[in-house]
Amino acid sequence: GAVVSQHPSWVICKSGTSVKIECRSLDFQATTMFWYRQFPKQSLMLMATSNEGSKATYEQGVEKDKFLINHASLTLSTLTVTSAHPEDSSFYICSARGLAAFGETQYFGPGTRLLVL
Amino acid sequence: QKEVEQDPGPLSVPEGAIVSLNCTYSNSAFQYFMWYRQYSRKGPELLMYTYSSGNKEDGRFTAQVDKSSKYISLFIRDSQPSDSATYLCAMSAGGGNKLTFGTGTQLKVEL
Image 1: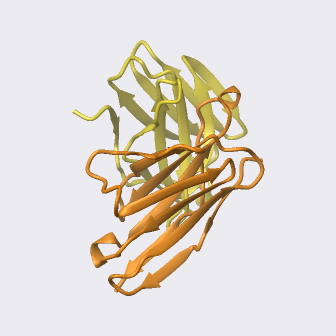
Image 2: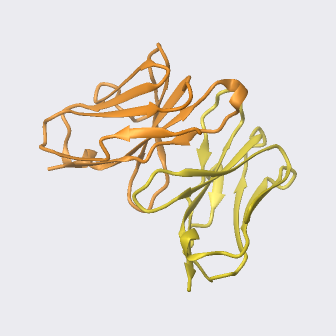
């Protein structure tokens, strides 16, 4: 149980284009989803937290107009990198947390590798 | 000072060794403690989840939490080459708060 999928697993795009990444909880309802960014050999950096049906909460220094997050249902959240630039190239990972009764654990997706040319 | 400190390694051990991975933290509000394993270019995989102090065992893995010392450990018995990965500790105060991660320890188990 507790499977989270991400799509696509990798994407290459041209500078200035927008990229959408999907995160789905496959076998549980995710009341909260998180989006992280990870640079090589570094730990996870939380970008934003989203609760189903409400606006995402962004961490300090993360541009909400650049990284659009939508959490439209209990099983799907999307991250759209708008007007991507080479410095946005990174490994993006989502995680999902179920109902409070299931504890504080977050279950992670496999990640999406973004390369902006 | 970071809220969670974790030695980045790399840690290299022979196959079959007992591995000890550790994290210290400063926030006494943390009550939920997790260990994740992350293979290269993959998302983190939950290994162990504990609440408050004590020990928890699952197969070759044992997690220990000492809240009085603000110190958590993950032990891996009979380590295998397939255990080679980065191990991340994570913790939360609960109540829907976000996880705070350690920087991760890179482990290599050699034949």
